[in-house]
Image 1 (cartoon, rainbow, N blue to C red):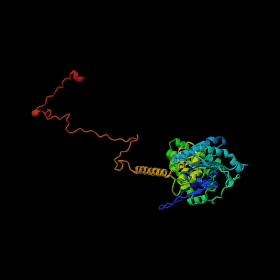
Image 2 (image 1 turned 90 degrees about the horizontal axis):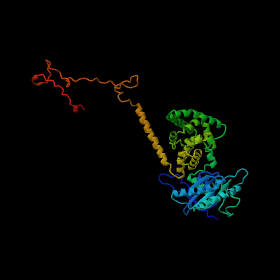
Image 3 (image 1 turned 120 degrees about the vertical axis):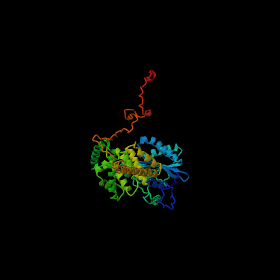
Image 4 (image 1 turned 60 degrees about the vertical axis):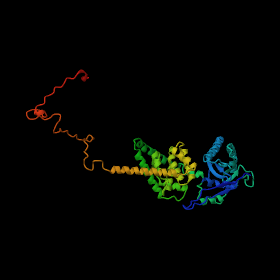
Amino acid sequence: MTDHDASAGPPRPPASDREPSAPTHVTLRSPAELADALPYLLGFHPNDSIVLMALHGEGRRFGGRLRLGIPVPDDWPDASDELAETLVTGCLRRGTRPDGIVLYLCQDPADGETSAAVMERLRPLAQRLRIACGALDVPVVEALCLSDGRFWSYCCSDPRCCPPEGTPLALPGTTVMAAAAAYAGIRVRGTLREMEARLSPRTGRWDEEQRRALDTATSRLLPRVIAGECEVTRQETLDLAERLIDRLHETPATADGAEADARDDALLTTEETATLVLGLQDRVARDRAAEWMEGPRTQAVLRLWRALARRCVPPYTEHAAAPLTLAGWVAWSSGEQAEARVALGRALTADPDYLFAQLLHHACNEGLDPEALRECLRQERADRAVCQAARAAADTRPPAGEADGTRSAAPSGGKASVPRARRRKPADDATHPKRAAGGAAAGGPAGKPRARRQPARRTTRERR
């Protein structure tokens, strides 16, 4: 029987400022406990997913993790090699090489298919992943298949713990891992499919109505942007977003799921959401909206970004990258890493080249602290407030010279004329001295007239 011992340390519960509490450790000793721990380690139940969990040290503590949707069978070899290399490389970048890996394959049966058939169909994929990890000198200590409430082990053939017909999963909330997660404040937010549905374009009666509203908003806003009204359009976008956030904040969500989303959708009109979706395509408007990541209205902000993502119906699905990235940022900043990863992954699906989503997705997966980015956004907002105050003060200050009335009015041509001062001759002109009485020039010896000197003729050299 495979050695199933593994330790999991869920995040610590909130502690007081004076005396932080000790971390909680849970030891998992069987395939059943490993299967039960998966949703608590990820924050959701993965559907149609490959999940790799790295183990470190003698105690085999859980470390890095990786999730990918199950690809088509033709892509299994390449996907297996890439997943194994990505997980090991990521752990090495953090400073520790994994000592083992736990593999999960999660997929529900298709119509007319049994969960046992799913397990057998995915067995070649499990074997290919084990080979890829072994090629990097990191063994797969356990490989589990989870399907329709049951699990199987690809590594254990002992019928006492891993019978051929599979083993039912424990009831939610009845295991030691569930108790530790509840103590630590960890919530399982449904299935991956349900989380993605909250961020996906809705279909139904208002699908065509939303498309027409997006077309109208495009024809109205695009000419204004081309005409250079970017700042005015940007401010209108942010003002509209704040009004909608206030509206959602005044109507708190009573549930967390499809019912709450339908209620939020009813509070927003198609014209408002279309205008906001188009306005957030402006990078500056999006960055300023990213500053709303904390405070009492944070949940209303997150609900708005989710609602906007649901309004990006075809052919405007690429426009969902902006609200999805904002939803991922607010979720990550609020400590909801599971939802953040899902939202940012959806943003990159909508637009793989969306740089803001790429940076946030990488930072979230690397386990970085979002406080550094929060502080940067706070400083940006404070600097902008100072600049706006300075401009407002400059607009209210009278121009120089206007207070004492010395500023001259401009003529009809538009330019102010400055009168030229008239030049006066001095009383005693040294160039033309006054003549004394009798017609003699003043200043001669003994009052005699001074002889007038004839100008000498210049020589040839002096004329050159």
